[in-house]
Image 1 (cartoon, protein in one colour):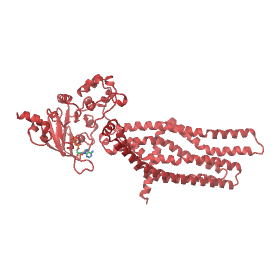
Image 2 (cartoon, helix red, strand yellow):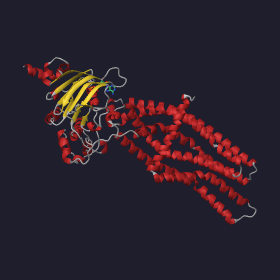
Image 3 (tube, protein in one colour):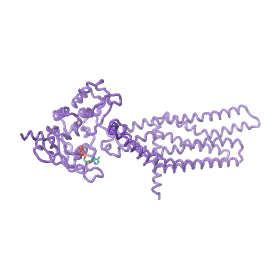
Length: 596
Ligand SMILES: Nc1ncnc2c1ncn2[C@@H]1O[C@H](COP(=O)(O)OP(=O)(O)OP(=O)(O)O)[C@@H](O)[C@H]1O
């Protein structure tokens, strides 16, 4: 029975084989010309050592001939000079052609990964392991693009060894077999290197991921500036150093083991080749044959030398490349170009949501109803379950129990694409897309050919139009100072995110604290506009500000995952309870007003 270690080794080797095949296939498809060139050049380069043996033997024979034939001598010399002279150039050209194949493979893989990420449904992107796999896939593209070159190198080694064997076989069959067997130590060493790499790389990759994450916090403008202001960037720098130290210690072990096996393999190879030479000399071969074989074997040795390194790269790339191929194989969603339907009614029926590994549900038996033309609000303290409810509604998190009914029919998890197309969700972690204003707003809809008039309407609705009119290039102004563009304030970024939802103009608007960073004046205008134009849609707002709730049709008050109160602003104002507790300070004015 195979031990678990063998299974790991077997799995690692089969992953390396699979990745080699896939990388070669993609390189042949997407960098055809350079891949063919690299293959032909690698093959020529691999055949140099055996060719050297034959040509040198011929030259030495011509030199040693009792009667020299100048023409034969010149031909033999010319042939050997060409082969030896071109050896370096062919090797260099093969390497460059492999690199140019790799560039094209990298281009194809990056495009493929970007498309795969863009085609993932929201619930998959919300899973932490998916974001880890996407990052691993991204990191794996660089080494993956080197795999076709590594494979050609390994195949070249095999060709060199077989060619040398064949060339020497003609002088001494036993020596020829010994030359071929000189590959054995390398094959054995590669098996052990595979084992070491398979075990060593997962912790190295984990340490690298932690270090990269910490490093990004220092390098990104917002977090970097915050840390600089706090004067605590050095704590992050120490964390980076710690993770790098861990990574280096782990890698040292892997590389030390690789070195041991490589050294053992080269020693074994050298011994077997020496034995081959000894066998040949003892077989009665002449000086010419011996000299030719020695020269061929020496250049063969240098060809075999880097095989372990090439194999090591394939082995260490395999897990990340597996992530890449897993990601690009994920079924993509096809977002409809425009909402094909208009939702009339949404009903949550005793909805319960529990995050994996959590003892208590984040949302517990929540029921609510909202119809087209209505605007409802979800309120509650931090962690009460509002965002989770919204996320369940749009199919980002699966319900544990209960049902989501859309137009009287139960919605599946994940949400059907045609239902999702009719939802415009502005969440608390909206993107700050540093493209042009036009591009940043157009991201609100999958439609193409959005006209300027539509963009201005959306920007005006989000109270950003006036600012954009003052920008140097209007809609085509580049955003983000790091690109030489215009910097926006936090509230202006939020208005831009709201403009995307306005442009989308879906049948269901879900606005999770849409004005949290926006000043009171613009907030009042935005909420007034939401009220005015609510007739043709369902509007669900999450808000912490009491006065934004005045005009909504119903308020659902959340507490510890449950709805504890429902009513209009006025009704809730008159009741003691969670709503009054939550907004006690903010409501003081209103209550005084009613009392007097
Ligand atoms: N991805 C997650 N994994 C595990 N628990 C989570 C996750 N997201 C939220 N929670 C937990 O679920 C509960 C509800 O969180 P939720 O984000 O829905 O609250 P909220 O009412 O929207 O709060 P806030 O007003 O702060 O936005 C909290 O206790 C929170 O810690």
